Amino acid sequence: MQRFGAVGQCRLAARRCATPMTAAPDGSLVNPNDFQEPSEASRKLFSEIAFAFDIDGVLYQGRNRVEGAEKVIKMIRSNGIRYVFLTNGGGVPEVKKADTLQERLQIAKNDDVIRGRMILSHTPMSAWSDELKNHGTILITGSHPEQARQIALDYGFKRVVTPADILAECKDVFPFDHLEGDVNGKPVPLPDGKRIPLLKDPYTTNIPHNALKIDQIFVWNDPRDWSVDIQIIHDLLISHEGYLGTISHRNGDKSLPNNGWQQDNQPGLWISNMDLLWKTNYPVNRFGTGAFMEALKGVWSMTTDGKELEYNALGKPSNYTYKYAHDRLLQYYHDMACNRGKSPSHDITKCHPLRRVYMIGDNPESDIRGANDFNAEDGTEWVPILVRTGVWRQTLTEKEPRHKPAVIVDDVVDAVVWALNNEGMKATREWLLSAVSHTKGYVKVPELEQEGNLKETGVKYPSEEEAGEAKL
Image (cartoon, helix red, strand yellow):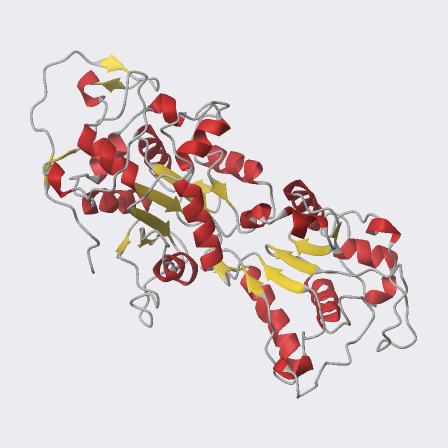
């Protein structure tokens, strides 16, 4: 397996002073000499690297945390290393997902190690321009459409419609029984007094002024009522300019691109992630949003004589999502200071350069592929590390993943140890697992032997006060 950019040999300090043991916050006995600030060489190195963690299958499996996952996060934070959680999960607010992760990792609520670092599959949409958010109407569906609606409203989108709203306005849209209640949520009136007219001629372009027009379609994480969602999405994609109940004259026109399909100002289709499978407590991987999309593509292919379904995929492995995560890491020190209500020091630039980012994931098709394909404009190297605690399993028919990581390791602990060793530190699993938080300073880290081997980047490492970071 290729080794990415090792920067020199290192050694652990061999001598320890005979010092009385003291009690750590968790009640265990520790040696005070084990806690000290990193050297300037280590601080410089820590300022140049970052981590991006997948969640499901990396930090926990189902509802059970991976052993040592919480210590990994605490160690990284206590040494000022930048990190984000980059997951294809979603359908909930970022704060709620952060609180769930903190609870599952059994990290105390007052330990600020999760919030402000959560990137869900749909989070990049929060950064869309106000012009896009203020104009037009979006249809949104997902595991909990009503909650998805609220998230979209919180992002700044002004007009948000769910399938339940459409069915409440016009039950003829779907002629069968459909899931109600908690699955599709409570309907609300269509925005701006819009209606869904029952046109005698669906090919007409004489559309009533109050007809509902959908401008964008968002699929956010694991829709539950596939039959309803596929029907409505298909109706919109064959419509005239996004008006429900119409059919475009351009459909099937061989003189147009894609034989005229989706060539009549139909709404854009945005998918928050394309994960076909994901890891839960069940021993066999479960279908994800990607499975819904395969079903939609199958229906589309049958009704259009095999023509391509045009859509936009977010989440991993899309470059769009990796660029968003990269930008968040560049702004990390600045954002963390702002999140704590502090004014960043003038030395904290809006974007703080990086040399290398380690992407730790369990899915070769999303985590590994995305990191391999992403080429940061600033030249930062993204290094994918695959763990064995999630989706991927070595089998007789698949001895290696299709998308090759830098290394395959047992779990997130080994992944971080490998990354630190790759940077020139002699870290061990035993060292990381024995690391505990301490009120008097940092967890002691292995020192670099050849400081001159560190790549010069012109980076000034910010102090804790400047960065707004508090010691554990």
